[in-house]
Length: 152
Image 1 (cartoon, helix red, strand yellow):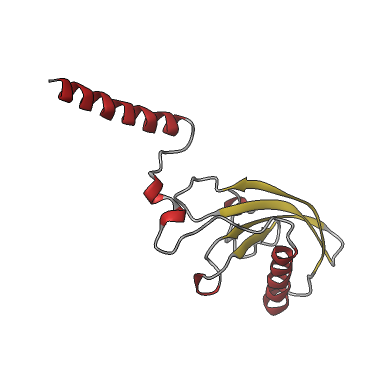
Image 2 (cartoon, rainbow, N blue to C red):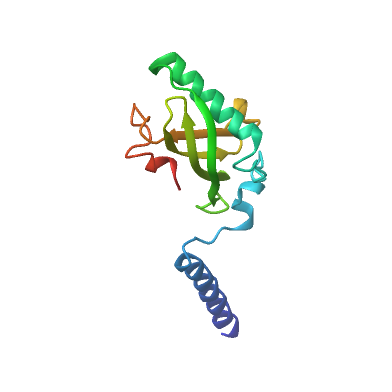
């Protein structure tokens, strides 16, 4: 009888912990389910938002897309870069760092840029990559409305 009561109490406590984690906005993640414990582990070591490699990748991809499909717009400089979230959906998802800032294009206008640095989503899953959206230039509405789908 004591074992049954003790077992029920432990199960209830486990449910309470999971409920408390859920109430805090995140669900309980068993340590074996974390991204770091997968067959191909993800460690969450992502470059910072203003890292030159991240900015270089973002600039290169934007300039290439504009020159190929849309026209003469090119990135001149970045301003007010900041991190908006890091792993906002919890430890069992692919690690992502969300960033925001302003970009000055060669047309003389500042525009908001939202981007994320994502782990293991680069070439063959070996490295990080950048997903981005420049406000007002999401012509195919990939991140519509107004780049909100590029944010956490």
